[in-house]
Image (cartoon, rainbow over the protein chains, first blue to last red):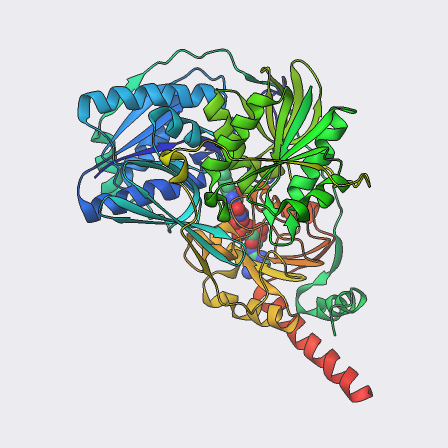
Length: 255
Length: 327
Ligand SMILES: Cc1cc2nc3c(=O)[nH]c(=O)nc-3n(C[C@H](O)[C@H](O)[C@H](O)COP(=O)(O)OP(=O)(O)OC[C@H]3O[C@@H](n4cnc5c(N)ncnc54)[C@H](O)[C@@H]3O)c2cc1C
C-alpha cells in the first residue's frame, strides 16, 4: 500500500492563550509544538498499515520552515519520507491549503505512482476549519469518509467506523480513498531513540507553493473572556472531606 | 434573496444545532425568506416543527439513500437546491454532520466555508466570528464569497420559536450518480445500553497525570460510582495508556456538561477546559495551589488526590449511613 498522511504543526498552548501585539497570531516564543492530535493518530495508522501490508508511507505538511520538526517526528515513528510545502509565517485558509496539497499529491503520484489511501485529521487543533481533507478528496475524485475512529483495510475495500452517540456508524468505500480521522483511532507509539536517529536521515522533498489571496480572511484573534474565577478553597488534604460532603449535599448529589 | 438552512434529522424531529442555525440565520438576515433542506424526512411531521422555527419553505430531498446518513448525497442535494434559489447564505448547525456536509458543499462549489461561527454581520463581505481551539480562541474573519457557507457553533445562539404555521413543502428528487451514493452508513453498531455516559453524566470525576498510574484510578472510580457519575480523564492519561480515549475530556475528547465536575490531578490546560465549558460547577483537587485549573474552578481542595479522594468517599458513606440511621 502507498499511504499519504497530511499533518499540521500546532503550538502546545498550556493553561492560557497569549496573543501577539497585533492579535493576528498566538505568541509562541515560549511554547513547544506538536502534530495536531487527530493527525498523530493518522500517522500511527499509516505506520501500522504499512507494517502489516507492506508498501510506503509519506507524510506531508504545509507550514513554515520550522514544521520540519513535525515531519521528523512522523518519520521517527516509522513514516518513510516527507513532503514539505514551505510557507512564510502567514496562515493559509482551508481552500488555499487544500489547493496546494492537491497539486503536491498530483505531482507525487505522477512521479512515484498513485496512493491507495490518504489520511487527514478531521479538523486541525488550531484553526478547526473542518474542510481540508474533504476539499482534497473532491479535487482528486476520491471517496471521502470523515471523523473516523476505526479503519480496517480488507483487500481493495476499507471499512470505516464513526463514533456516534450510543455506538458506531460503519461505512465501506473502495480504495483509493481519503479518510479523515480523530484522536482515539489508536494509541500512537512514542518514538524510540534509534527511530529519531533514522528520521534524521530520511528524505524531505521541499516545495514553495504560492499563497493565493485568502477567501476566509483572518482579521484578528480574540481570547474569549472566561469568567476568571477565584476558587473557594474548601481545605487542605483529607481533612477537607467533610466540607466536600457538605457541598455535595447542598448540590443535592448526596442522595 | 433568501437563506437556506440544512436541517439534520433526529429520531424525534430535527436536531438542536439545526434549530440554532435557523435562529442565527434569521437574526443575520432579518425579513429574508428562510428555506430549509431536510433529506429523507416525513414532510408532514417536520413541516409544522420547522414552520414554528421560522421556516417558510421546507425542501424535502427524496431518494432511497436518505434512509440512512449519506453526507455526500446531502451535499449534492443542497448544491442542486442552491442553484434554484437565490441565496445570500447556506448554513447548518456546527455538529459533526453539519460541518462535514457544508465542507462538501464548499468543495463542490469551490467556495470558502467558515465553520463554527458564533456571530456574523451581513456584508458583503460577510464578517464572521468563529471559534478555534475547541472554543478557547475566537477569530474574526471576512468571508469573500457571493454565497456565504457557514456553520453555527453549538449553543452560540438559542433555538427560537416564531409560532408561525407549518412550512410549505416542496419535494424533489436530486440527481445523484453512483459516486454520490458511495459514502453512506452501511451498518449501525449500537453499544449495549446501561451505564452513565460521560457526555450526559450529572457528575463527572476525572483524574489526570496526578493519578500516577492506571491503578491510581481505583479511588476515582469508587467516588464516581458513589455519586452515580462517570469517570473521565485528561489526555496525559490516555496517552499513557491508563484509560481508553472514550474517557478523555477535552477538545479532542468528549465535551461534558455535568452539575459538578470533580477534576483531580489535572492542571487545567486550555484544551482540557475546552471540554468542560458546559460544567455548572468545578471542584479541583490538586497538590499545586497555583495550578491554572484553580482559575476556572469554583471550589478547590489542595492536597494529594490519593489521600483526598478516598477520604471524600469515606465521608460520603458515613454521611449516608448517618442519614439512613436518622430515618
Ligand atoms: C492540540 C491539542 C489538543 C489537546 N486535547 C486535549 C484534550 O482533549 N483533553 C485533555 O485533557 N488534554 C488535551 N491536550 C493536552 C493538554 O494540553 C495537556 O497536556 C493535558 O490536559 C495535561 O494533562 P494533565 O492535566 O493530566 O497533566 P499535567 O498538565 O501534567 O498536570 C498534572 C496536574 O496534577 C497535579 N498533581 C500531580 N500529582 C498530584 C497528586 N498526587 N494529587 C493531586 N494533584 C496532583 C499537578 O499539580 C498538575 O496540576 C491537548 C493538547 C493539544 C496540543
